[in-house]
Length: 195
Image 1: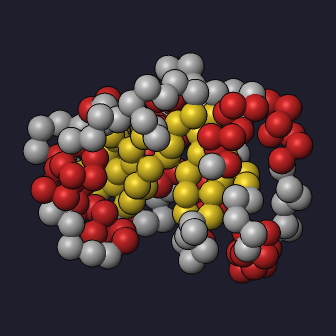
Image 2 (image 1 turned 180 degrees about the horizontal axis):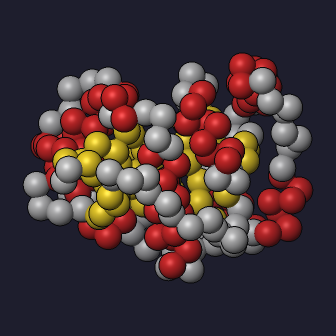
């Protein structure tokens, strides 16, 4: 099971500061092939435009305004998607499928495209944002921590995996955030987050 992180509130969001030479925009017709190329470059695999439709565009949760792209010279090179577990969800957002082509690393583009998704949810009065990630995605986890996401433990091996991950990042292990999260979110939201 992937690791899970939560941003328990959407208050005090930093402004989005895209570096010079890059622009932020949302989905446009024809981006299905761009999305597949970015995700393949970021995660490996052989996704095609058809996979983009199957995994994102043709799903009831898809909103063109929630699929963000960072571009350089009008070419998409980074992406992140505002997602929900179901089309009726209005409280818990998912930061989904964040990827930046490796030859553009070092410009904090993953941070800015992720922040665009968080702003998207804030603008729509969502209460929190969650994401799933892997132990080996160290730069991504560091970005998420800097965006005020905290680890949440949804599987028995998560405490130990987070401890190991924090050691690799040379960071102090964060204490379990369950009690502070409970004070910010309703019981029904917590059940959905930890499901």
